[in-house]
View 1 (cartoon, helix red, strand yellow):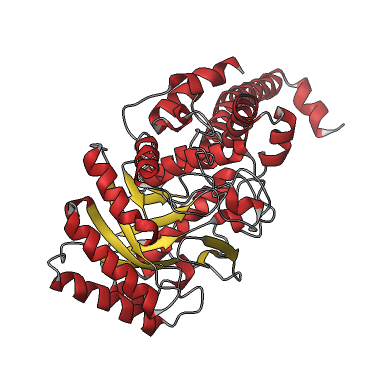
View 2 (cartoon, helix red, strand yellow):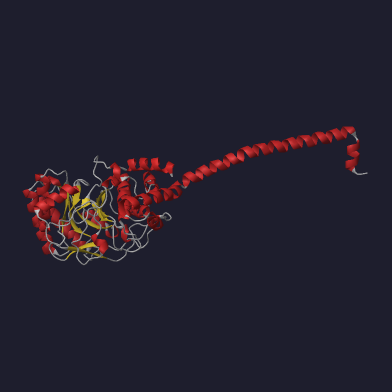
Length: 444
Protein backbone atom coordinates (compact mmCIF):
# COMPACT_ATOMS: atom_id res chain seq x y z
CA UNK A 1 0.00 0.00 0.00
CA UNK A 2 1.42 3.33 -1.03
CA UNK A 3 1.97 6.24 1.37
CA UNK A 4 -0.73 8.30 -0.42
CA UNK A 5 -3.29 5.50 0.08
CA UNK A 6 -2.49 5.26 3.79
CA UNK A 7 -2.77 9.03 4.20
CA UNK A 8 -6.10 9.16 2.41
CA UNK A 9 -7.62 6.28 4.51
CA UNK A 10 -7.03 8.24 7.74
CA UNK A 11 -9.84 10.81 8.21
CA UNK A 12 -7.64 13.20 10.17
CA UNK A 13 -4.85 13.05 7.64
CA UNK A 14 -7.31 13.35 4.77
CA UNK A 15 -8.74 16.53 6.28
CA UNK A 16 -5.21 17.91 6.70
CA UNK A 17 -4.35 17.25 3.05
CA UNK A 18 -7.56 18.89 1.84
CA UNK A 19 -6.92 21.94 4.00
CA UNK A 20 -3.38 22.30 2.61
CA UNK A 21 -4.65 21.94 -0.95
CA UNK A 22 -7.37 24.53 -0.36
CA UNK A 23 -4.92 27.03 1.12
CA UNK A 24 -2.51 26.50 -1.79
CA UNK A 25 -5.27 26.95 -4.36
CA UNK A 26 -6.46 30.14 -2.64
CA UNK A 27 -2.90 31.49 -2.63
CA UNK A 28 -2.51 30.80 -6.35
CA UNK A 29 -5.80 32.58 -7.11
CA UNK A 30 -4.73 35.56 -5.00
CA UNK A 31 -1.36 35.82 -6.79
CA UNK A 32 -3.11 35.61 -10.12
CA UNK A 33 -5.49 38.44 -9.25
CA UNK A 34 -2.63 40.65 -8.07
CA UNK A 35 -0.54 40.00 -11.16
CA UNK A 36 -3.53 40.52 -13.42
CA UNK A 37 -4.10 43.92 -11.87
CA UNK A 38 -0.52 45.21 -11.52
CA UNK A 39 1.09 44.01 -14.74
CA UNK A 40 -1.39 45.58 -17.21
CA UNK A 41 -1.22 48.83 -15.25
CA UNK A 42 2.58 48.82 -15.36
CA UNK A 43 2.51 47.91 -19.04
CA UNK A 44 0.21 50.85 -19.75
CA UNK A 45 2.51 53.14 -17.76
CA UNK A 46 5.50 52.02 -19.80
CA UNK A 47 3.54 52.54 -23.01
CA UNK A 48 2.75 56.11 -21.93
CA UNK A 49 6.40 56.77 -21.07
CA UNK A 50 7.51 55.38 -24.43
CA UNK A 51 4.92 57.51 -26.17
CA UNK A 52 6.16 60.67 -24.45
CA UNK A 53 9.81 59.82 -25.11
CA UNK A 54 9.15 59.20 -28.78
CA UNK A 55 6.76 62.10 -29.37
CA UNK A 56 9.29 64.20 -31.31
CA UNK A 57 9.67 61.30 -33.76
CA UNK A 58 6.28 59.62 -34.09
CA UNK A 59 3.92 62.58 -33.74
CA UNK A 60 6.30 64.74 -35.77
CA UNK A 61 5.90 62.54 -38.82
CA UNK A 62 2.11 62.67 -38.62
CA UNK A 63 1.93 66.41 -38.09
CA UNK A 64 4.53 67.13 -40.77
CA UNK A 65 2.70 64.99 -43.29
CA UNK A 66 -0.65 66.72 -42.90
CA UNK A 67 0.86 70.16 -42.97
CA UNK A 68 2.90 69.19 -46.02
CA UNK A 69 -0.45 68.38 -47.63
CA UNK A 70 -1.84 71.74 -46.54
CA UNK A 71 1.12 73.73 -47.84
CA UNK A 72 1.19 71.82 -51.12
CA UNK A 73 -2.48 72.42 -51.82
CA UNK A 74 -2.68 76.05 -50.72
CA UNK A 75 0.64 77.55 -51.76
CA UNK A 76 2.41 75.68 -54.50
CA UNK A 77 0.09 73.54 -56.54
CA UNK A 78 2.23 70.53 -55.71
CA UNK A 79 0.05 67.50 -55.09
CA UNK A 80 -0.18 66.15 -51.53
CA UNK A 81 1.15 62.79 -52.66
CA UNK A 82 4.21 64.37 -54.26
CA UNK A 83 5.00 66.52 -51.25
CA UNK A 84 4.30 63.69 -48.80
CA UNK A 85 6.69 61.32 -50.53
CA UNK A 86 9.25 64.10 -50.76
CA UNK A 87 9.35 65.24 -47.14
CA UNK A 88 7.90 62.60 -44.78
CA UNK A 89 11.12 60.89 -43.84
CA UNK A 90 12.87 59.81 -40.66
CA UNK A 91 14.26 62.45 -38.31
CA UNK A 92 17.86 63.53 -38.70
CA UNK A 93 19.94 62.19 -35.83
CA UNK A 94 22.36 65.09 -35.37
CA UNK A 95 24.66 67.49 -37.18
CA UNK A 96 25.61 67.62 -40.83
CA UNK A 97 28.56 68.58 -42.92
CA UNK A 98 28.77 72.12 -44.19
CA UNK A 99 27.28 72.52 -47.68
CA UNK A 100 29.04 74.01 -50.63
CA UNK A 101 29.48 77.71 -50.03
CA UNK A 102 26.88 80.22 -51.07
CA UNK A 103 29.34 82.89 -52.17
CA UNK A 104 28.56 86.33 -53.53
CA UNK A 105 31.16 87.38 -56.11
CA UNK A 106 30.83 90.75 -57.82
CA UNK A 107 31.93 90.80 -61.44
CA UNK A 108 31.38 94.54 -61.77
CA UNK A 109 30.44 97.45 -59.54
CA UNK A 110 26.75 96.66 -59.74
CA UNK A 111 26.37 92.99 -60.69
CA UNK A 112 26.91 90.26 -58.10
CA UNK A 113 26.92 86.64 -59.20
CA UNK A 114 26.92 83.62 -56.93
CA UNK A 115 28.85 80.40 -57.18
CA UNK A 116 29.26 77.26 -55.11
CA UNK A 117 32.46 76.47 -53.28
CA UNK A 118 33.87 73.30 -51.78
CA UNK A 119 32.24 71.16 -49.14
CA UNK A 120 33.83 71.53 -45.73
CA UNK A 121 33.04 70.06 -42.32
CA UNK A 122 30.85 72.00 -39.93
CA UNK A 123 32.47 73.75 -37.00
CA UNK A 124 32.31 71.76 -33.80
CA UNK A 125 30.24 68.99 -35.29
CA UNK A 126 30.97 66.88 -32.20
CA UNK A 127 30.93 69.76 -29.75
CA UNK A 128 28.39 70.31 -27.00
CA UNK A 129 25.84 72.09 -29.18
CA UNK A 130 22.66 70.12 -28.62
CA UNK A 131 19.36 71.73 -29.54
CA UNK A 132 17.77 73.50 -26.54
CA UNK A 133 14.84 71.64 -25.02
CA UNK A 134 12.64 74.66 -25.74
CA UNK A 135 12.94 73.93 -29.47
CA UNK A 136 11.66 70.37 -29.41
CA UNK A 137 8.04 71.44 -29.84
CA UNK A 138 9.08 73.50 -32.84
CA UNK A 139 10.46 70.49 -34.66
CA UNK A 140 7.57 68.28 -33.66
CA UNK A 141 5.29 70.66 -35.52
CA UNK A 142 4.54 70.59 -39.21
CA UNK A 143 6.38 71.84 -42.25
CA UNK A 144 4.13 74.92 -42.29
CA UNK A 145 2.05 75.84 -39.31
CA UNK A 146 -0.39 78.64 -40.10
CA UNK A 147 -3.31 78.84 -42.51
CA UNK A 148 -2.96 81.80 -44.86
CA UNK A 149 -6.34 83.22 -43.91
CA UNK A 150 -5.02 84.21 -40.46
CA UNK A 151 -2.61 86.92 -41.54
CA UNK A 152 -1.36 89.17 -38.77
CA UNK A 153 0.33 92.55 -38.68
CA UNK A 154 1.29 92.30 -35.00
CA UNK A 155 4.98 91.86 -35.68
CA UNK A 156 7.35 91.51 -38.66
CA UNK A 157 7.58 88.00 -40.02
CA UNK A 158 11.41 88.03 -39.89
CA UNK A 159 14.00 89.68 -37.70
CA UNK A 160 15.86 90.74 -40.84
CA UNK A 161 16.14 90.29 -44.61
CA UNK A 162 19.09 90.61 -46.96
CA UNK A 163 18.46 93.26 -49.61
CA UNK A 164 20.16 93.90 -52.95
CA UNK A 165 19.04 96.99 -54.94
CA UNK A 166 19.60 95.74 -58.48
CA UNK A 167 17.17 95.77 -61.37
CA UNK A 168 16.52 92.58 -63.33
CA UNK A 169 19.03 93.65 -65.98
CA UNK A 170 21.72 94.19 -63.32
CA UNK A 171 21.54 97.98 -63.38
CA UNK A 172 21.21 100.10 -60.26
CA UNK A 173 17.78 100.80 -58.81
CA UNK A 174 17.06 104.52 -58.38
CA UNK A 175 15.90 106.19 -55.17
CA UNK A 176 12.20 105.90 -56.04
CA UNK A 177 12.54 102.18 -56.74
CA UNK A 178 14.53 101.61 -53.56
CA UNK A 179 11.96 103.52 -51.54
CA UNK A 180 9.07 101.49 -52.96
CA UNK A 181 10.93 98.22 -52.40
CA UNK A 182 11.84 99.05 -48.81
CA UNK A 183 8.24 99.88 -48.01
CA UNK A 184 7.42 96.35 -49.17
CA UNK A 185 10.28 94.86 -47.17
CA UNK A 186 9.17 96.75 -44.05
CA UNK A 187 5.95 94.71 -44.02
CA UNK A 188 8.07 91.62 -43.40
CA UNK A 189 11.21 92.78 -41.53
CA UNK A 190 12.53 95.87 -39.76
CA UNK A 191 16.23 95.06 -40.25
CA UNK A 192 17.92 94.89 -43.66
CA UNK A 193 21.40 93.70 -44.55
CA UNK A 194 23.31 95.35 -47.41
CA UNK A 195 26.48 93.88 -48.94
CA UNK A 196 28.09 96.96 -50.44
CA UNK A 197 27.75 100.70 -50.97
CA UNK A 198 27.78 100.50 -54.78
CA UNK A 199 24.80 101.84 -56.71
CA UNK A 200 24.49 104.40 -53.90
CA UNK A 201 22.56 101.71 -52.08
CA UNK A 202 23.41 102.83 -48.54
CA UNK A 203 22.72 106.47 -49.42
CA UNK A 204 19.41 105.58 -51.10
CA UNK A 205 18.31 103.29 -48.26
CA UNK A 206 19.04 105.95 -45.63
CA UNK A 207 17.21 108.60 -47.64
CA UNK A 208 14.21 106.34 -48.31
CA UNK A 209 13.86 105.30 -44.67
CA UNK A 210 14.16 108.85 -43.42
CA UNK A 211 11.95 110.61 -45.96
CA UNK A 212 9.24 107.95 -46.03
CA UNK A 213 9.34 107.32 -42.27
CA UNK A 214 9.86 103.61 -42.85
CA UNK A 215 10.23 101.57 -39.66
CA UNK A 216 13.57 100.02 -40.52
CA UNK A 217 17.27 100.07 -39.66
CA UNK A 218 20.29 99.15 -41.79
CA UNK A 219 23.17 96.72 -41.30
CA UNK A 220 25.56 97.90 -43.99
CA UNK A 221 28.30 96.18 -45.94
CA UNK A 222 31.69 97.06 -47.39
CA UNK A 223 32.74 94.93 -50.34
CA UNK A 224 36.35 93.74 -50.19
CA UNK A 225 36.46 90.74 -52.52
CA UNK A 226 37.85 92.89 -55.35
CA UNK A 227 40.79 94.12 -53.31
CA UNK A 228 41.97 97.22 -51.49
CA UNK A 229 40.87 99.73 -54.10
CA UNK A 230 37.23 98.54 -54.05
CA UNK A 231 37.32 98.34 -50.26
CA UNK A 232 38.53 101.94 -50.07
CA UNK A 233 35.85 103.26 -52.44
CA UNK A 234 33.13 101.44 -50.49
CA UNK A 235 34.51 102.80 -47.22
CA UNK A 236 34.62 106.37 -48.55
CA UNK A 237 31.02 106.10 -49.73
CA UNK A 238 29.96 104.58 -46.41
CA UNK A 239 31.42 107.52 -44.48
CA UNK A 240 29.89 110.07 -46.84
CA UNK A 241 26.41 108.51 -46.64
CA UNK A 242 26.57 108.10 -42.86
CA UNK A 243 27.47 111.77 -42.44
CA UNK A 244 24.88 113.01 -44.93
CA UNK A 245 21.96 111.15 -43.38
CA UNK A 246 21.01 109.81 -39.94
CA UNK A 247 23.88 107.51 -38.95
CA UNK A 248 21.85 106.18 -36.01
CA UNK A 249 19.92 104.14 -38.59
CA UNK A 250 23.13 102.20 -39.30
CA UNK A 251 23.36 99.45 -36.70
CA UNK A 252 26.54 97.83 -37.98
CA UNK A 253 28.80 97.25 -40.96
CA UNK A 254 30.12 93.93 -42.24
CA UNK A 255 33.58 94.16 -43.79
CA UNK A 256 33.28 91.54 -46.51
CA UNK A 257 31.12 88.48 -47.01
CA UNK A 258 32.61 84.96 -46.93
CA UNK A 259 36.01 86.24 -48.05
CA UNK A 260 38.06 83.60 -46.22
CA UNK A 261 35.86 81.01 -47.92
CA UNK A 262 36.77 82.65 -51.24
CA UNK A 263 40.51 82.42 -50.50
CA UNK A 264 41.42 85.66 -48.74
CA UNK A 265 43.95 85.21 -45.95
CA UNK A 266 42.76 85.65 -42.41
CA UNK A 267 45.44 88.30 -41.80
CA UNK A 268 44.30 90.37 -44.79
CA UNK A 269 40.69 90.25 -43.66
CA UNK A 270 41.59 91.20 -40.08
CA UNK A 271 43.59 94.11 -41.51
CA UNK A 272 40.57 95.37 -43.45
CA UNK A 273 38.34 95.11 -40.36
CA UNK A 274 40.81 97.12 -38.29
CA UNK A 275 41.21 99.68 -41.05
CA UNK A 276 37.47 100.26 -41.29
CA UNK A 277 37.09 100.54 -37.52
CA UNK A 278 39.93 103.06 -37.28
CA UNK A 279 38.43 105.18 -40.07
CA UNK A 280 35.00 105.23 -38.46
CA UNK A 281 36.45 106.28 -35.13
CA UNK A 282 38.34 109.10 -36.83
CA UNK A 283 35.16 110.24 -38.61
CA UNK A 284 33.08 110.31 -35.42
CA UNK A 285 31.25 107.12 -36.37
CA UNK A 286 32.82 104.88 -33.76
CA UNK A 287 29.40 103.96 -32.37
CA UNK A 288 28.80 101.69 -35.38
CA UNK A 289 29.82 98.04 -34.73
CA UNK A 290 32.37 96.62 -37.20
CA UNK A 291 32.66 92.92 -38.00
CA UNK A 292 32.90 90.46 -40.87
CA UNK A 293 30.54 87.79 -42.17
CA UNK A 294 31.84 84.29 -42.86
CA UNK A 295 30.61 80.74 -43.28
CA UNK A 296 30.36 79.05 -39.90
CA UNK A 297 33.10 76.54 -40.75
CA UNK A 298 35.56 79.32 -41.61
CA UNK A 299 34.87 81.72 -38.78
CA UNK A 300 38.04 81.53 -36.68
CA UNK A 301 38.93 82.83 -33.24
CA UNK A 302 41.13 85.46 -34.87
CA UNK A 303 38.17 86.77 -36.88
CA UNK A 304 36.06 86.69 -33.73
CA UNK A 305 38.68 88.71 -31.84
CA UNK A 306 38.70 91.36 -34.59
CA UNK A 307 34.89 91.56 -34.84
CA UNK A 308 32.45 93.35 -32.57
CA UNK A 309 29.98 90.53 -33.14
CA UNK A 310 30.00 87.14 -34.87
CA UNK A 311 27.98 86.98 -38.08
CA UNK A 312 27.83 83.61 -39.84
CA UNK A 313 26.20 82.36 -43.03
CA UNK A 314 24.60 78.90 -42.68
CA UNK A 315 22.91 77.34 -45.73
CA UNK A 316 21.74 73.77 -45.17
CA UNK A 317 19.95 73.85 -48.53
CA UNK A 318 23.32 72.87 -50.02
CA UNK A 319 23.87 69.91 -47.67
CA UNK A 320 24.83 66.63 -49.37
CA UNK A 321 22.06 64.80 -47.47
CA UNK A 322 18.43 65.84 -47.06
CA UNK A 323 16.13 64.27 -44.48
CA UNK A 324 13.34 66.79 -44.06
CA UNK A 325 12.84 70.52 -43.55
CA UNK A 326 12.78 70.22 -39.78
CA UNK A 327 16.16 68.48 -39.82
CA UNK A 328 17.62 71.14 -42.11
CA UNK A 329 16.50 73.86 -39.72
CA UNK A 330 17.78 71.92 -36.72
CA UNK A 331 21.21 71.74 -38.35
CA UNK A 332 21.35 75.53 -38.73
CA UNK A 333 20.68 76.03 -35.03
CA UNK A 334 23.16 73.34 -34.03
CA UNK A 335 25.89 74.88 -36.15
CA UNK A 336 25.21 78.35 -34.77
CA UNK A 337 25.37 76.86 -31.28
CA UNK A 338 28.73 75.30 -32.13
CA UNK A 339 30.14 78.68 -33.15
CA UNK A 340 28.72 80.25 -30.02
CA UNK A 341 30.33 77.56 -27.83
CA UNK A 342 33.68 77.20 -29.59
CA UNK A 343 34.46 80.53 -31.29
CA UNK A 344 32.42 83.48 -30.10
CA UNK A 345 33.51 83.80 -26.50
CA UNK A 346 31.20 86.36 -24.91
CA UNK A 347 30.31 88.08 -28.20
CA UNK A 348 26.83 87.75 -29.69
CA UNK A 349 26.30 85.40 -32.64
CA UNK A 350 24.03 86.42 -35.51
CA UNK A 351 23.05 84.37 -38.54
CA UNK A 352 23.93 86.52 -41.56
CA UNK A 353 22.27 84.36 -44.21
CA UNK A 354 20.04 81.33 -44.36
CA UNK A 355 17.20 80.46 -46.70
CA UNK A 356 15.66 78.04 -49.17
CA UNK A 357 15.23 78.36 -52.90
CA UNK A 358 11.85 77.73 -54.51
CA UNK A 359 13.22 76.32 -57.77
CA UNK A 360 16.28 74.75 -59.36
CA UNK A 361 18.69 72.21 -57.94
CA UNK A 362 21.32 72.30 -55.19
CA UNK A 363 21.64 68.56 -54.67
CA UNK A 364 19.25 66.29 -52.79
CA UNK A 365 17.28 69.11 -51.14
CA UNK A 366 13.90 69.45 -52.90
CA UNK A 367 13.53 73.05 -54.05
CA UNK A 368 9.85 73.94 -54.22
CA UNK A 369 7.75 76.86 -53.08
CA UNK A 370 6.12 74.60 -50.50
CA UNK A 371 9.51 73.81 -49.01
CA UNK A 372 10.60 77.45 -49.11
CA UNK A 373 7.51 78.32 -47.06
CA UNK A 374 8.10 75.39 -44.72
CA UNK A 375 11.74 76.30 -44.16
CA UNK A 376 10.96 79.97 -43.58
CA UNK A 377 8.31 79.19 -40.98
CA UNK A 378 10.29 76.54 -39.13
CA UNK A 379 13.50 78.57 -39.17
CA UNK A 380 11.75 81.67 -37.83
CA UNK A 381 10.32 79.66 -34.93
CA UNK A 382 13.65 77.96 -34.20
CA UNK A 383 15.70 81.16 -34.34
CA UNK A 384 13.23 83.01 -32.15
CA UNK A 385 13.21 80.20 -29.59
CA UNK A 386 17.02 80.07 -29.57
CA UNK A 387 17.26 83.89 -29.32
CA UNK A 388 19.24 84.33 -32.54
CA UNK A 389 19.14 87.50 -34.59
CA UNK A 390 19.27 86.64 -38.29
CA UNK A 391 18.90 87.89 -41.84
CA UNK A 392 16.71 85.66 -43.94
CA UNK A 393 18.07 85.23 -47.47
CA UNK A 394 16.67 87.04 -49.36
CA UNK A 395 14.17 89.83 -50.11
CA UNK A 396 13.49 89.31 -53.84
CA UNK A 397 14.32 86.70 -56.44
CA UNK A 398 17.71 87.59 -57.92
CA UNK A 399 16.85 87.49 -61.61
CA UNK A 400 19.75 89.92 -62.10
CA UNK A 401 22.23 87.08 -61.48
CA UNK A 402 22.38 86.33 -65.18
CA UNK A 403 23.85 83.01 -66.17
CA UNK A 404 23.73 81.61 -62.65
CA UNK A 405 21.93 78.46 -61.55
CA UNK A 406 18.15 78.65 -61.32
CA UNK A 407 18.39 77.96 -57.60
CA UNK A 408 20.52 81.08 -57.06
CA UNK A 409 17.81 83.22 -58.63
CA UNK A 410 14.90 81.94 -56.54
CA UNK A 411 15.71 82.46 -52.85
CA UNK A 412 13.48 85.53 -52.57
CA UNK A 413 10.31 85.71 -50.54
CA UNK A 414 9.18 88.28 -53.12
CA UNK A 415 9.48 87.65 -56.84
CA UNK A 416 11.54 90.02 -58.99
CA UNK A 417 8.60 92.45 -59.24
CA UNK A 418 8.23 92.50 -55.45
CA UNK A 419 5.01 90.54 -55.48
CA UNK A 420 4.84 88.22 -52.47
CA UNK A 421 5.53 84.60 -53.46
CA UNK A 422 3.22 83.37 -50.70
CA UNK A 423 0.90 84.69 -48.02
CA UNK A 424 3.10 85.85 -45.14
CA UNK A 425 0.31 84.84 -42.77
CA UNK A 426 2.08 81.49 -42.77
CA UNK A 427 4.84 83.18 -40.74
CA UNK A 428 2.63 84.13 -37.82
CA UNK A 429 3.87 83.50 -34.30
CA UNK A 430 4.86 79.95 -33.44
CA UNK A 431 2.37 79.82 -30.57
CA UNK A 432 -0.48 80.57 -32.96
CA UNK A 433 0.88 77.89 -35.25
CA UNK A 434 0.87 75.30 -32.50
CA UNK A 435 -2.67 76.27 -31.49
CA UNK A 436 -3.81 75.90 -35.07
CA UNK A 437 -2.31 72.42 -35.32
CA UNK A 438 -3.95 71.40 -32.04
CA UNK A 439 -7.32 72.34 -33.51
CA UNK A 440 -6.64 70.38 -36.70
CA UNK A 441 -5.16 67.13 -35.37
CA UNK A 442 -8.29 65.91 -33.49
CA UNK A 443 -10.13 66.03 -36.81
CA UNK A 444 -7.62 63.79 -38.58
